[in-house]
Image (cartoon, rainbow, N blue to C red; front, side, top):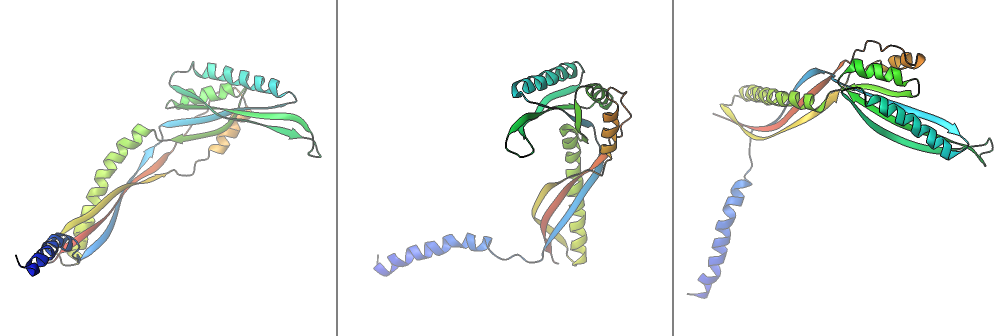
Length: 236
């Protein structure tokens, strides 16, 4: 085989091998980026309450013991209520200094108890009872994971449908005969809770420890799924 032909053969094979890559990199025209969103209001079905015990004492060991006994009693009481999930939250202590800031005169400690339940009435009543020993730090409402996932699955289908309708509208506006879907991503746009006046409710519960639980309006949050994609309009 002539030497010139031997050298040309690898070059020809390399050029042929690059053709698919060049075809893949060919520019696409009439591409449009679109966005569609599906959302709905979902009622809160989960109540979360954070209670805490806080005290100050010169003896840190006695202080820790008092806090622990207070929490243990609250945990034991909470476990007696069906449907209430009980867990311990943050616990911390810090020294208290004199007016000159030089000498430690006492220790202050705070420990949290977190309660969670789908039974608002039961948890509200329990929280009111525990206020005899503890204080309320936070009360809020949320959407349970199972409820959120179920609604997001439905919203995903709605978002895809809305994207398809918008793609057809854009195709007609450009005078196209149809379109190809180039890419599509589906993402949760998050949960947007409306303002909720929980502070007033917390203060009313704090004023009367052990008072009967009041009626609670849990409210709702908006859950959204967003579809972002690119289409290629086919021209006649």
